[in-house]
Amino acid sequence: MATVLMVIAPDQFRDEEYAHPKEVLVNRGARVVTASVAPGPCRGKLGMLARAEVSIGDVDADDYDAVLFVGGGGSAIFFDDPDAHRIATEMHAAGRIVAAICIAPSVLAHAGLLRGVRATAFSSQHDDLLAHGALWTGEPVTVDGAIITGNGPSAAHDLGMAVADALGLP
Image 1: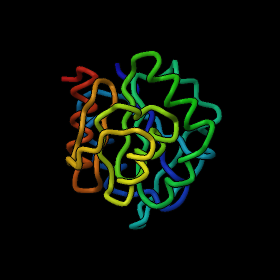
Image 2: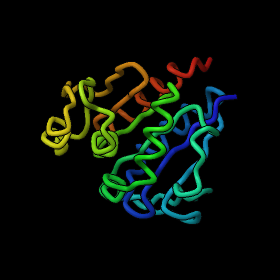
Image 3: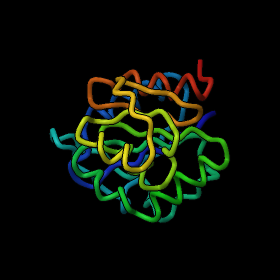
Image 4: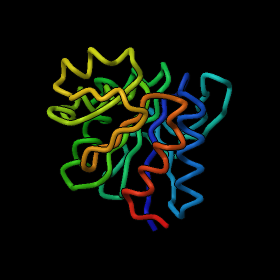
């Protein structure tokens, strides 16, 4: 069974960008583990309550087949977070799926993973991604090898599908 780590902000994560990919992944047979800055309750921008099971500082990247960084304004706390960068770079180096949606692709950009990589994000991140070497597509979902990015809430379901497809889930 594939295990996917979903990273959310403790406050102001984007509800749909967490709920829709999680639903797709679970329905297709994945186990989903939610992480944040600390275990415990997290609140979405639209009021959704989620529970982080693990702190990103305690994540062992070897335990997961994919990571998905969820967007929303709160996710900016991960842009330059060393644990977020460690998880993303270790998983990428191991050939695992690394995904992000909305403003969260900036986490991947700041970790150095988008240099020369086709990527998308919420339009506010256009200049940031370009400054870090990404090849901006503006598409709802962009898949470039093992890196999958989405541009916002309306792409959340399709991003979940792309991650599930990349994991070979039925």
